[in-house]
Image (tube, rainbow, N blue to C red; front, side):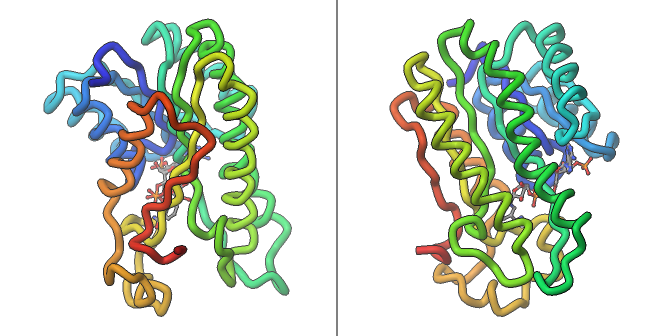
Length: 242
Ligand code: NAP
């Protein structure tokens, strides 16, 4: 279904990003994955995509918050793979704390990685999409960006920002056949949510259990294939934000 497409996935070494890389590879895409430090995990994801699906894969170490480094990253991916057709902005971090005591550094870091990182990737891939007269941009937001969450003002601001960014980019690039959508996961079982399985928030999920990275990857795969959906935010949250 995605044969001949190149997918660039940030945060592809673990959790949701790793599941997205494997899902898109299973549909025939070649995958370039970006990680921030965990080379071993990134290489393992690449290996799995190659062995199981015959995908052309490569892992790149890059801090998505660094504008100049992302410019170089995108150029390198273009040299290695020839183009980029699907961009999945998934890399993200948390630095939780109550607003009364949240450190400036924790606010800035979360906004830099989660929101500016998305801008950086879209900014540097857009030239490729414009020349191709097509492309799929899929940003991983969060239900926290829709509902808010006590103790996550920085994270919620970054994820709400992604939703506004998604809709603006969708409007701007639609005339060239480029779509831009977001997926808003709820509680997904990854390293990020370790230890939260028994929290009151998890107990409030209407479907009664946390989601898996594969649940989110399925929504990303849909958006990677859909041609007539843009500016949309798909919740994958077991109903928690309805
Ligand atoms: P995770 O397991 O903590 O993995 C984070 C990934 O992002 C890793 O691959 C990590 O690379 C990479 N990364 C972190 N900072 C980076 C940076 N500055 N530059 C490049 N890569 C960086 O997270 P996850 O739970 O899979 O979450 C993935 C996305 O989904 C995030 O945007 C998160 O906010 C969102 N989300 C998650 C949940 C959830 O319940 N898990 C819910 C809603 C939204 P290394 O392996 O090298 O560290």
